[in-house]
Length: 217
Image 1 (cartoon, rainbow, N blue to C red):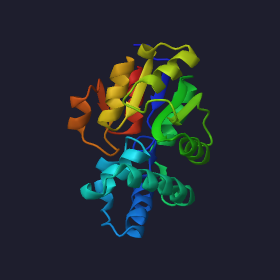
Image 2 (tube, rainbow, N blue to C red; image 1 turned 90 degrees about the vertical axis):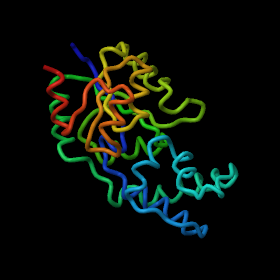
Image 3 (cartoon, rainbow, N blue to C red; image 1 turned 120 degrees about the vertical axis):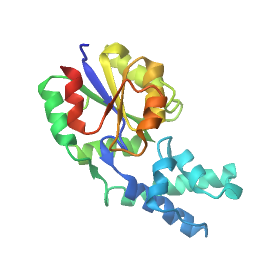
């Protein structure tokens, strides 16, 4: 199959951001007197935007819409100050991006991270590569797994979904890719299991970023 472009999820796919997401969220919980969670728990809390992150992190009895929204606003303020304390690209991501650019594939990002932070993270931590589009969660646009963002990328780049590899680490990513009609690739270095990725439509599974290149042969 001849692929022309690749769309990356961000957290858990390009960037290992779990520690900063956990620390910022735990700071909000501590401020309000709620129990904090171990970092590993955030593997299942993240992936569907800041509001869902706060919903999952709060105790069940505290999941009131007004409080969730307050915590979401707090999260975005706190995260702005600490988002890059420990966040780094995963091993071999830089090498993968170099190889993809040599092959002249277009590079894009679609994330449920707030759009401001998606742009900030890619531009600061992956400054050596040109991304044709970077889309985070935006007001008025349904978040993943709705395929709206992916289809917007396809339309603006004038590349059909079937010519895209979609690379992600969660069920949300696989559902997005399947709904849009992309070739779905689940990554095992991120936040979720191989079983979850396969059960939600992964066409292929990769254990290392450089394994993606084998799909281009």
